[in-house]
Image (cartoon, rainbow, N blue to C red; front, side):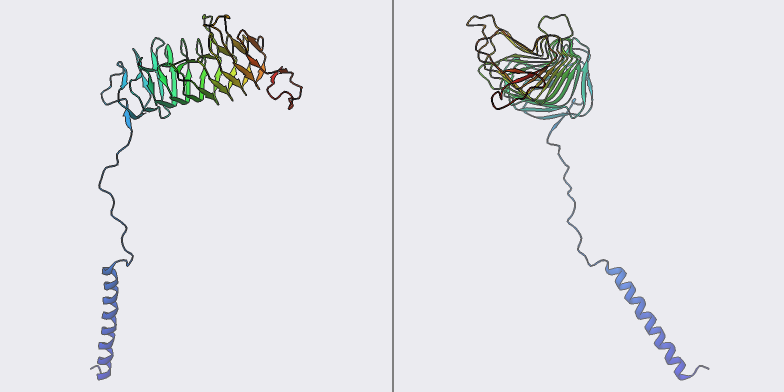
Length: 315
């Protein structure tokens, strides 16, 4: 039989083992001492922009934008007839979201209604094909930015005056790459950091890389290259425009053509062509305007100094 002290030792061992087990169980049941994070939101996240095309769009009727707001494409859009997107409101942002709009050559990619519209932004995508890629002459005080427009059977882009055209690539359009149209008394268009190349290889006599048909347009820091006809055409009556700090190269006509017939109604006044690199055009500049300010031509190995800071480098 076990002795009295053996029984005492056995009881003490059981007490110790039982206490450890209870401590472990208490720790397991108590869980972590760190407080839990905030509860997750149960509200749905609402996209503050309207997706296009709308549900049920059939691919033939235009996508109409008739209310102010922000819109974005969710996929590539191909249309078989008519215009692809029509803007019929002020204060619209149309984000192509990196997608492409394509169609046969008889249609228009992005159009605006005849009513003058302001505060419109079209950006961030591609427009390929169509008769006119982006045909928005009624837009004023608006912006086109980060667009590629190519392959139109007529003009790549037609836009109204008073806004901005920034970081745009318009190439391989049959007529003009970009045409800026005077819209009422809205002046002050800026065209910058863009590329207008290989446009105008059609039968029209008015082809060019860029046509300025408005007043007080500033074309700067852009490449106008290998277009049929003039690189830059300043149309009849277009005045107070500035073409500076561009690279105008390899166009089959003049690098810059200032059109004018010398009458009060159709004369082009006080345009400036300066600080451009004008290379391999035929010739560098043709000036038919009145009081045009053309910077001195200097050769490729000449120094442009403080005595001629507005010179065009021609070689």
